[in-house]
Length: 176
Ligand SMILES: [Zn+2]
Image (tube, rainbow, N blue to C red):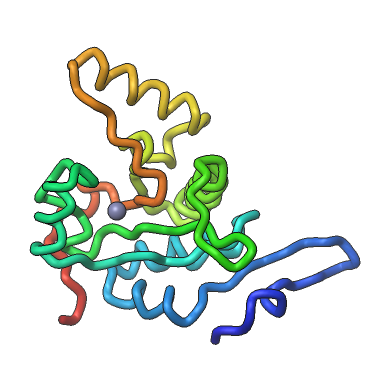
């Protein structure tokens, strides 16, 4: 069910607690992705301090090729192609915001959800399974240092989350 933004806020026990719900478009984009990733995102929205929208789930190979060409992605083996990845957008004051601080908060919520559900999720800002990371900013710093050492440019993709390839190796493409 989708309701306008202010109505999504739930006030309980006299304490100002806000919980968000996924909107109609987010649910539509989430529907074809792996059910375990759906569970993580559905739980993350309940735990998140920041509202978010699902920007993208499954992606076509054509689009992936274009993104690699543009430097927005480093791989043609993207987990978006198989339904193992989502991109989230921080939704603040009626628009998608790109300030990195929001993405740290989103990743924190996704981490809590993935730990609770025991579903290993990799974040695109550190490219490690965030279930195992105690400090997300440290994890990013470690990733950047590793890339630097390799003489490679880091790709910090805050909106991106995917199911750990080791635990979810299958080429899941949903029901389509
Ligand atoms: Zn992505």
